[in-house]
Length: 377
Image (cartoon, rainbow, N blue to C red; front, side, top):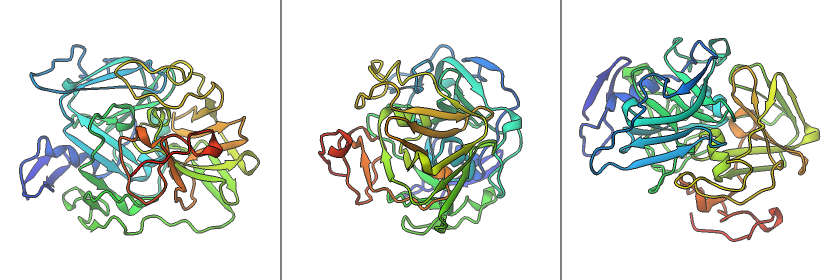
């Protein structure tokens, strides 16, 4: 296999037959996960480093478009991403509430409009393992209006855009999984999976199968979790009422995840402590319309059915509160409960297909007000 050298070491090409991949060194950044920047100042994109203000599209290049949860931040990316990855490290899971599905572009291939916030240094990921990296390596960015996840700026390495906020005409197709030993449920996509990372980047270099076990959480009756910085803690009692993968545009745009997954408890079984902030901005201005060229439409819910919450300190995802349903949904990676989805909803909009044998509803089951129609995986 061919290899490339970068600031974090070299990385071998996984292509078969071997070939020199464009900007192969991008994967070197994912030997570990990232640490936030040092400022909470609001910045007006494109002031986030060298992100371009005037996107130049070469002849024949595609232009990928996307937007944050509320639509205040929009993105245009010229050409195919240099790499698509899935990272299962604890920091990525705590930041967006699920594994990171990232698409990496060079800064001059990305145009961002709207205001962003940088996660402060004081709100760095609190972890007991080796998923943290030196200060300043990465800048996790959210929309200043809705706190939806936008991208992770990996210094000189590239801009890791949350795949969930982008439109993928041909679907999201990752090239590799990293830290798969920490997965919370199987991803049977046939893509190469590192147990941790390549040996050149401090990992064991060991590969895993799709079906190899990841993290295990014993059933204890009470299940705990915390946000990215640890300021907000959660405790849930008993078994959840529901576990699903929701592929709707709103869930993807808020988390930045191309495959959102949630675990829900009734509100009387949930205790959340710490500086929680409700997101006042509605999805695309009230769940009623989607800007042309952005994400595909989803089933239209009345405003207020979902109240999305973040940590006031780190802007990490906390929960999706459903007052009218009497339930609170947590992105599954936040709570130490064994996750196994019962079914998938809004699968017609799914950019990241998952062949797990579970029912795939076009919208919702009949009991949830949907058509009850299913679609092939």
